[in-house]
Amino acid sequence: MSSTIQTTSSERFARCVEVSKRVRWDIDRDVIRGRVFDLTQKFLPDGLSKVEELNFLTTEEKRFLSQIQGRTYANVFALVERYIDAKILELSRDYALGDQNALEALVRFTDEELKHQELFRRIEHLASEQALPGYTFAWDPNEVARAILSKSTWAVLLLTLHIELFTQLHYKESIEPDENLSPLFKDVFLYHWREESQHAVIDELELKRIDARMSPEAKDRAVDEFLELVGAVDGILQAQAAADAKYFLATCGRSLPDSEGDEVRAGLLKAYRWQYIISGASHPHLLKVLAGLLDQRQTKRIIDALATLS
Image 1 (tube, rainbow, N blue to C red):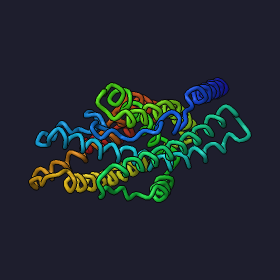
Image 2 (image 1 turned 135 degrees about the vertical axis):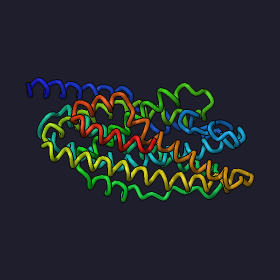
Image 3 (image 1 turned 180 degrees about the vertical axis):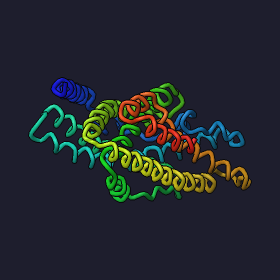
Image 4 (image 1 turned 90 degrees about the horizontal axis):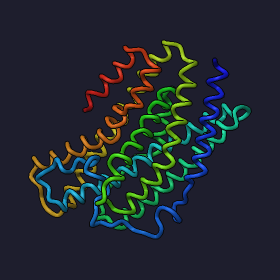
């Protein structure tokens, strides 16, 4: 039985390598192509930004708020990909003298994540050149990575699978269908999605490999750590929502009443929680994976904890 599972996993890693070679892209040649952002268009679609719920804002203000959110959206990916790269590089050592399909798949994964980090740094630079001063994204990616990597590999891989599943969901259901987005911003996430698709497969394979070695007690602790990581992510989202609201209120061109300023802050936090926690936590495939790894009690703990953020 274990031999069959190993063969199947090796074949799936080989498929990831094949796809990686086929969809390979270059930042300048394929994505940026000498372009700048079109500020007459949104960055994030309404399904992600939730700006349509702030009905006291003008059309132009909603578009501006979507651009601020889009800038943060790219920066958050740059932030989390630092820890993902480090963890996948660590796991690749397990295959150095073993399954070479797996080794190549994980090495390609790390190479692609390094490229994604560079892409998002470039996008932030382009956005900063056109934006009004005052925007802040103060998180140190190395500090955040150290905090996340202090947790168990199981918890880190589950968080990573969650992120890479919602990446695909956001692109296919919200970004791709919206014809009113900045073409450059849309292309950034088209090409990002093309490589993230196989990353999610690798996350799941590695999560299941690690899970098979764990005792029930270790898994209980890992569930605790995963929930701690989600709480830490939510802390980042709360602080960034406040920072983005402050920037918007200072630069939107008019003075909003305090009550509307409070609604902007609450609306941003709601949108960010949807983008980075809820949309992934409710993903059908993540729920299927959890059902295969956890007992009902453990699954309920995760679902109940995440429900409090909805």
